Amino acid sequence: MPETQTTTVLIVGAGPTGLTLAVDLARRGIGVRIIDKSPHFPRSSRAKGPNPRSLEVLEDLGVVERVLSAGSAPLPMRKYRSGEVIAQTDPFAAARPAPDAPYDRPWLIAQWRLEEILRARLAEYGVRVELGAELVGLAQDDDCVTASLAGGGEIGARYAVGCDGGHSAVRKLLGVPFEGSTDESQAMVCGDVEAEGPERGVWHQWFDEDGGVMLCPIPGTRSGWWFQAAPETDVEGRHVPPSLESFQRLFAKHTRLPGDRLSRATLLSAYRVNERLADRYRVGRVFLAGDAAHVHAIAGGLGMNTGIQDAYNLGWKLARTATGRAAPELLDTYQEERLPIAARTLDITSERLRATLEAIKEPGGGLDSAVTPQTYGLGDGYRWSSLAPAGATARLRAGDRAPDAPCADAATGAPRRLFEAFAGPHFTLLGFGTGTAPALRGAAAAHAGELRAHGVDAGDAGGLADHRGHARSAYGIGPDEDVLVLIRPDNHVGLIAPGGGHRAVAAYLKGAALERA
Image 1 (cartoon, rainbow, N blue to C red):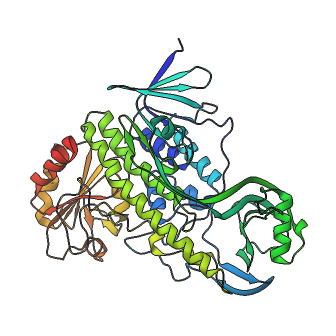
Image 2 (image 1 turned 60 degrees about the horizontal axis):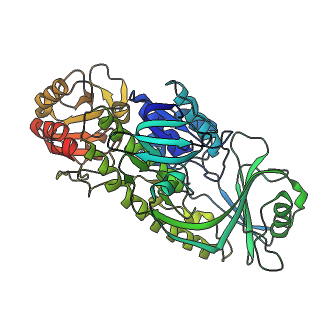
Image 3 (image 1 turned 90 degrees about the vertical axis):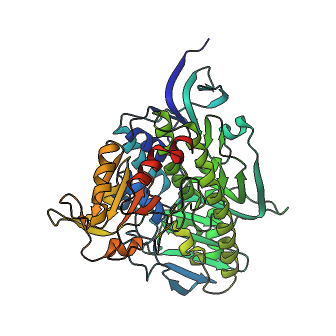
């Protein structure tokens, strides 16, 4: 019999989704193992980087500065027709950070580089990805999950999460349907190439009536580029597999430049528009996240980002349940909250793809048609959730994303953002106004270790001063109102209550919402 090694949570798949979940669990002190069937760390460049909401997640995980340093802001898009420049646009030219949203645009970074950063963060907690570990079997009972590996090893875990992509072995072993469609007519070939000549300060987009080529410089490299194109077809109308030679032919055809300007094509892949959604995210003690649960059209860049945000939603719930601070039913709210987001994302990406395909038929059209505020992720919330009881201000409702705001330390006057108060694996209670001070003190004493309480102009020396009114504005709270706002560990609003509502806070933390879900 093979020896069974045990852990609290087993994560299958070491892409951005799995790594985000592993970091979030590890920082909460939860035992975690993360395996990947690849013998080497996967190097994929298809996803071009985190959107504003994912940047907020990465800030909470303590890696956003590394991500920003390793990447670059989105570049202006230069459009060509018949080889000639006809337009240049910057879809983010008017974007500016706001007091309630510090990240005003997505960030360009190769997926493999983002994964390196997340692996380094995970290693700081003493956890490393286990390579060459292919899942071939999955069994569970009321107490644990047993994962069987190729070669005969076994891993026992209290919970398992499949973050292993669109061809997920976990999903297949669970027998979860993955309904949707594949559009064979909408195809693309992709790869990383070396290129000579093109200016690196722009994203080049050559479109003609019969296809196109796109070249975007890869941040952190001298001559590396992301190459995307509609594929060649052979005499029988079949798509030609990606290769350096086919890339060179496509480049010469659409750019009117010598094809040999491209060299060293790597990370080759062929893409067809897939739109599929798992019909459930939980089977007993096993969960699905990221592409294992949903795949989308690439327009808008929401695939990887939706997975990162899946992991952020699931992490704190697994941690609370595994440590006995919440009943197992809390884990049902993962599907309750995230499956509708994935369904909505399918609609958004499908519409953005349609708009982009229409735009590139016209001179001056390009990938900027895929960009809308819907692709930023800042409007995604869970107002329908059982974890979002009645409660609202003039601007927010329970379930919404909790906004940022610049404040000051009430004692020292030093600048302090709300996101800095939220950072870490805890609940946060904000008390706006002096009338919230008793509730803040009571909640902090009753829930020490899992809740941090901060008064906002509440008269306590350890609180926050909202001198410019940004916090009250972001939360829709008037200057004379006393209001409590409880923020979940994933930085969504859990509860909004009157300033003296300490019983409502206690009920949320100890009562039906979390213990019986």
